[in-house]
Amino acid sequence: MTTIKARLNCSRLGSDGMYPLVIRVIHERVKREVYTPYRLRPEEFEICSETAMSKKRGKERISYIREVNEYLNYIKEELGSIRDSLESRGEYTTPDLVQAFKNRNDMGCFFTYAAYRINELISLGKDGTAANYRSAVNAFEHYQGSRDLSTDDITSKMIESFIDSRARQGNSPNTAAFYVKQLRAIYNKAYDEGYVRSAHNPFRRIKLKGSKTPKRAITKKEINRIAGADLKGRHRHLELSRDLFMFSLYTRGMAFVDMCYLQKENIHGNMLVYRRRKTGQWLQIRIEAPLKELLRKYNDANSRYLLPMLRDDDSYKGYRYIQRRLNKRIREIGDLLEFNFPLTFYVARHTWATLAHESGIAMSVISEGMGHGSEKTTRIYLAGLSHQIIDKANRAVINSWKL
Image 1 (cartoon, helix red, strand yellow):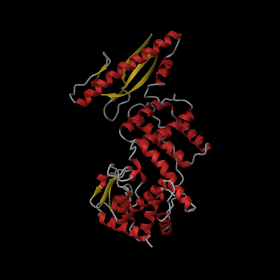
Image 2 (cartoon, one colour):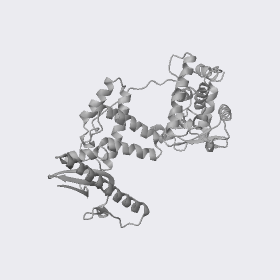
Image 3 (cartoon, one colour):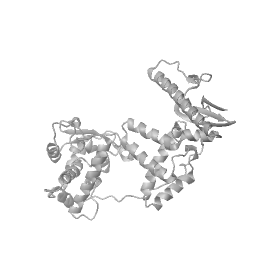
Image 4 (cartoon, rainbow, N blue to C red):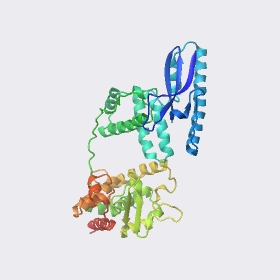
């Protein structure tokens, strides 16, 4: 005899005053719990009828309760179907039944929960974070060799072994640190939402320090070589890549992703105002003459974007595609000019900061100008720094390499 009942796991009280909703499966006196994606307050669950209910009239909560009950009907029907299938084959155990369900649905399975989080991030428009999670999860799944892994079964030894395996495959310490950071974020979120029952956090004692990536700033002479490079007759993306590199220099080292998503509404008179996609910080930049020329060059009356990268496809997939293409082209320019280092768009950002420093501009002004909102110097000294000071600094940097 197998019983399948919905219950609240009252041993896992969350900071929000709610408990995880689970399906309790008992077969031959052996009990297992299957976690659902939902959490309820004690007064919102009727044990006898195994249904969720709400006395509140808020539309959002009523909709949530309705969704919970629809899911309960689905999951109990699904488990019942698996039970009937196993019974038809002969003897089975509670773990057999639960495992069959876990492979497809259980939020207590690490890879199932990770997929749920990735889809949620995509629905919120956080495609970059979703892509980072997916990359780390794929690497971890490859190491595991299976998607069958309970979040509670993850151990520090397992994570350390995963790190060692990446090193044997030739991954740098930075790559391993990146993967572990993403996996830790997923695990912590699962814990916060009540899907982890283990009191031991396997990531707690994992200490990873990535090696410092060499930063490269180029000279004023090299800037002029890039600006004056003859690219006629070559792939059209070479000229675009060169112009984007210069665009970044004219805009205090603007990041590639921010350049891609600039729209015409970001122009306010003679100012370029935008929000950094990485930090959410608002920045405003005075449009100096060389920047104005580039904006005029790429102006398209039929597009809302200031630059041509996303005019055909502004999805995240479209962004990643053009990013890869242009990263390749900017490196080709470096090869054409016979630079003995890889030329990247990040070089423009680092170069702006270096030239600003060499021009005697205060470190605090540089920090503010580049949107380093998390730096201590910026937080302490630059609460109300006028953008005119930064615009003056930008003009000095632009003029510094002119012959």
